[in-house]
Length: 598
Image (tube, rainbow, N blue to C red):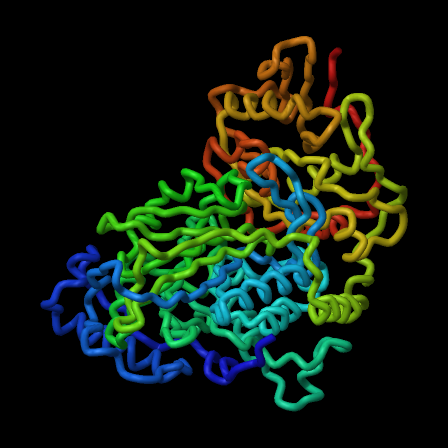
């Protein structure tokens, strides 16, 4: 494992640089005749970044490595040097392997296998590093969050410590980093503690001294209230200097934060100018996207990525892209704006795979020879020997979180079972649907759908604390608001009807529906009522669902393909905690929301 570097002393405040206007096209950016204003902007960005970054700059660039060129002519006689780049995406604090689909990966043959978990991820990264002699490890964003209770309860500090030990060289900024706020990220970068004792905030964990890696976001608009990020970084891998740019796609549905984002294409153009001004030609981009695809084969390339406008528009000087927040893995080659093939990879979320890009670099110029660059996704298999240091970190984090995890939040007057009756209705799944509607009514939700197979145990009688609720519902899925017409809503119920008695859907208390199994598939819902009124096919309805039911990973869910889909700004465990606190003590609701005719 790599030792902590000096990032904590330099990554403590937003970079104060001015974003300047320039040509929208990459070709114009590469023009030899740059305007004085643009040149001044490039120099400003370079100087301020140098003043903050600890760069591993050695010799000056070779005379023929000219800034402004995206790549030099290549002939087969050129001897290249292989530079390995490793990428993980949307880790979401998964120090231990999540239960269920977020801890599994399917291959192209449809075989489901356990995947992920911090200790197995660390062992896999170590093996991939050993194969190449050296490698750079990047995280795309959405690295923090509450998939494991200790990560959530300890303010994401165990996740950052894990990244430190893993040797992460740079982490992009995603929606979860933005939603948690600039102050939260600042505490993760440089804690306010000064003494050894003050830094021991989570015994028995060792003192927390902050991130040993930079948070990167080329399109964050600098301000005193913004998250502490860098516009780029330069990392030496062997004898090659590699530049890193990173963007997160702005979302109209995300909660407003103090960290504002600029246009990602323009931001990358400007950042690439700065890197090439420094003589860096090998450039890798991190993209935190809202695109979700249903691909589960690490070697396949889904259309959702190849058709993503940002992938083709980003500066052609960026030689490879690692895309996060895409759900499953992907390995692609997509033509850039200059019609040259560029490697585009997406690691599976929650540490289930590691994206591997082996850049072929001309050592004389630093240029990447794209025809010789290769890429693949390595599944994080459970059969690899786990890293003992990470296992110990997870154990210590679990012990440190015990007190808060066991603080009572509410209670239940009886055990609420998750088992289903003859109509495929689970009392506990009904409670989950009710709690999600309760938490999002103020955000426009009118009904809720929930899948019972997201529940792992009954809700026990007696006091309810965070650890108990997390055991019942461990995934930490984000909630989404999907606005559809009544016709589309009925089609979604028809789609899910075949899963009655298996995994869904459960509905909130204001919904009643009847499934007639004697009717043909796709037309089995004979009655659908919301608030005691038949669903109007031409009216719009907003339904709250978790990210599983709104994701293509659920066999191509219609709620991922239709209507207006936006984040609700909280997770399923957040909604459950709020419901237990506001509406307790809980008891099992009466069934009868679903009727099945056979």
